[in-house]
Picture 1: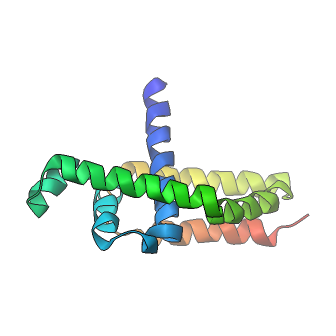
Picture 2 (picture 1 turned 180 degrees about the horizontal axis):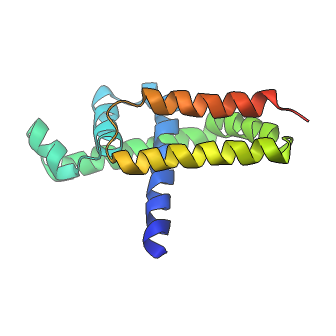
Length: 142
């Protein structure tokens, strides 16, 4: 069970970084964005990225960690991600139980898909699946 918890925490961290990148990525340098995407989206190690760019592993590590910290600082100050997530949470809290059960089942299916694919190169299908769940939740107000 502990291994599953670690995997869920790792997935949650990746989702958080992806959300932060979507909101604050434009405020990072191009290189920071690229390193963060390679590390989190493509699941490349710092060493693999370093080899590709012919720089030290430490330089990649520092760039990724600085970018992550910068995005967390932007969020702490501006709260743009929290505001959008808060609005989503309010919508979900007013849903009928059957709709929530259906949404949970669909999200579990998406999670299964994520786990089975490992590294995701084409996220289009997953985005469409998540959009479908969101539409279901948004249209089924009590």
